[in-house]
Length: 271
Length: 181
Image 1 (cartoon, rainbow over the protein chains, first blue to last red):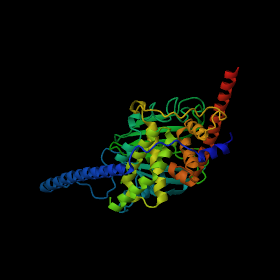
Image 2 (spheres, rainbow over the protein chains, first blue to last red; image 1 turned 90 degrees about the vertical axis):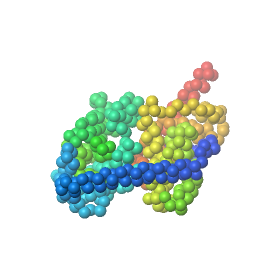
Image 3 (tube, rainbow over the protein chains, first blue to last red; image 1 turned 90 degrees about the horizontal axis):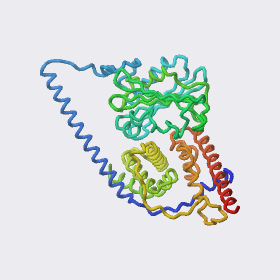
Image 4 (cartoon, chains in turn yellow, orange; image 1 turned 60 degrees about the vertical axis):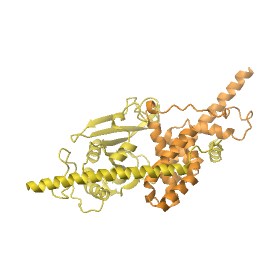
């Protein structure tokens, strides 16, 4: 059987489909109920927060103390790394647009030899996960990496929990994984959890190309920065050229130092 | 959500549930799990429904969410994975010699079983591109990757499928020779 026959067979699959075991309308009703529940919980939370803020404001006014930082100062919270400095306009419309403007401003300093740096708008992927595609040209030719910011709720829903990272249950870890877990020379691929000064943890992880038992070469070093508040910044950092026709280039887009600087930048805000 | 948006979602769910379940089944080879995945995907889709416009966008998005649900399911540790031990329908062995099994579904059964031999991303690419007959661009959108990646994943997937089918056929031949000897 050749590949054309297989392709034709896949297109004409006949499956012994059993009757549907659930009612789509019932699922819609359940979804509506859940959404209302979430909104009610969010509303309650916001009301409690507003009350708390109001109480603090009243107490602050009564003592005459002004302990608030100037609005829009762009400073990182105390105890957080100061990150990459920027003068991105605080008046930019949304946090995602501010992130895009911030990356546009700092990447030329992070990638001093790069030219033609382009930072795409953060898409509204789904469920609290927002991705921007960055492209540039350096001495190895065109390169690209993705920056994804994930809210705490999105991180809980879509990210592998930090405790399980680099463990045997991670999809491409362990001998039974779906991807190579070794370098071509047989040494294990890197997967490190590095505690950061602000209390977060940076996960740096290599991936390799090839069959699980026969890796060809290391083709990416990805970063996931798990912030203390539950949000996550992911950098997909491979060695491919930008779409639409990606091919491998001589080296991975960002060095470890550059990767760490971008991933742990506290100025990347969440919506 | 407004009443008309809610009704639009219900219409979508009624119309697309079977197709989504079929796609999910091809990914996981388990009708019960396929239904669970579709329900989870519909619940997630409902949350963002107001922001989705246009049938193509919605279909692509729904497939993307379904795919993510399945990949998430793949990543679940074994200790949290359910044991599914319901009644298994008597579908026969798709790996038997086609000459002995002229039933029209034998090829489909063989290919569905062979699909399970593919790594997750390759399987997803092959299912969307070849079984669901999506364009390369739509498959890339659903997989959230480049079109080049889709092409390479599909090519590798088909090559692997061919290898699996050839191996099974060879094993079957050896079995027949062994029985006749």
